[in-house]
Image (tube, rainbow, N blue to C red):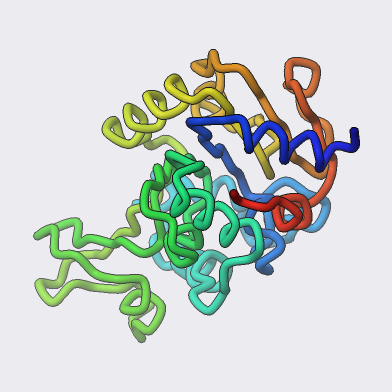
Length: 241
């Protein structure tokens, strides 16, 4: 049996599937990942991206942060790809109970997924650090100020988890409970090197662990099925029955 047929069989026989995804899920939509050869970490800026995307940098050099953030992170015209669409279909047909994602692009919701745990936050929610007023991503993107400001004069901060910041407790709790209750966990498009997010997969104790990733990961040996290919290419071949 080939690997796609095996994946189809696993999905057909599963009652509670959870999907855990990383940057590789969105690369087929045109969003660069962080750690590949052509990812953000290998591009040259005045400061390394991991420094720019830290809480300390945001507080000390907010203008520099927003120059990078608006240029590289606010990809608002990007559309969901085959992977996002297939996962939304799986949820609608009762096959998939939750998506747990390390991505901040909102593409799962744009494709129609309802239960999405965004471990690292989202570019689509922003708030004033002074009064707490909410602003959407379009407001931040279109702001003519070097640093987007609230009508009260406060600095607007994206609800994205920066380095040095902790994950949202309710999001973590929901993701862990979903993973712990799954009979099949599909991990895709992630190198499983970003913690604490990657550590959450340890809560899975179900029947089938499936790994779909372009490159090998540290968990390949523990998986029931490993497919080294693009996520959208693989999932687009699956029929949701």
